[in-house]
Amino acid sequence: MDILILAVVIALVAVGAISGLVVSSRKKKQLPPTPPSTPTITAPPAEPQVGEDAVETAEEPRRTIEEVVLPEATAPVEAPVAEPEVPAAPAIEVPEPTAGRLVRLRARLARSQNSLGKGLLTLLSREHLDEDTWEEIEETLLIADVGVVPTQELVERLRERVKVLGTRTPADLRALLKEELLTLIGTDFDRAVKTESGEDTPGVIMVVGVNGTGKTTTTGKLARVLVADGRSVVLGAADTFRAAAADQLQTWGERVGARTVRGPEGGDPASIAYDAVKEGIAEGADVVLIDTAGRLHTKTGLMDELGKVKRVVEKHGPLDEILLVLDATTGQNGLTQARVFAEVVDITGIVLTKLDGTAKGGIVVAVQRELGVPVKLVGLGEGPDDLAPFEPEAFVDALIGD
Image (cartoon, rainbow, N blue to C red; front, side, top):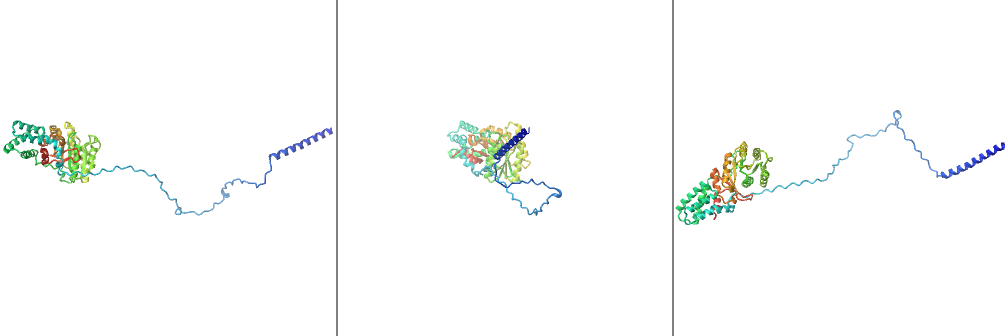
């Protein structure tokens, strides 16, 4: 029994020795020897201390506000902005002088020569002036729109003077016809366009007429006439019913340096006319030109409104001129228009347009007889300076020809 126990103990000791050797061998393989180095010890972070245990803060010198140097402000660099192109102002034109302008434009009356001047000279040059010839002379005058009464007067005077004259040379006939036509047209009218009010206000000119007579264009051309004569002008665009009428008038004004007073399309014409005169007074202008709407003479309401424009403008002072623009090609219908306008406003002068495009130069005589006021200006072309002060002598010379 004792031998058995001793054998077991010896066996256990042997097994333990063997196990120790195996474990020692494994540890040497997994943990190879490392070179010796200085160990790094990381201290735990210091905990903040408060109260009596807190460390006192070291005193540092403080700067005053004057000692503080602030960094210089630098302006932000902006990208250059392209400036919009400003349209160049229109060049100011120098209108053609008005003195003798009708003489320079006499060639434009060539069409009127054929009917009136040359026609009469041809008939009067016949060897025998019988009744048939005198009827032809009378018919020529009527076709030229001289009018019935003026035609009868002229024919009677020509009859008497031809009898007294006896022998009729071409030079005698031309002198005779020129004298009689001048008498018919009239040389004693004051045909100057009045531009001085006699007060501390500008001269005020109102331009009236029906649609299609070239009224706005005539107003612009009249501004050129006045500027050419040394007057400063303000334009009033009181034609608010026709599209682009104000633009058209402003373009005419800019060409000669005249300012245009305008309002909204469809605005009150009387208000714009009033403002135009007011601006003219403020600027010290010599003349205010007011372009009114082209009104059909059959529209009573519109004609009444024209009278309103006149009354409103006269609150600043009297109107110096009311010019009626007539189309010379309308003939006797133009006289009907003239009569209606004369009933509404006091017409002081006539502007005959398109006289170069008609063979009816006698309308000058007829319209003056109808209204008792002179033709002051005539339009003889489409050019900007083709509006000329009316000169009876130059007109008759152009009608008769050389």
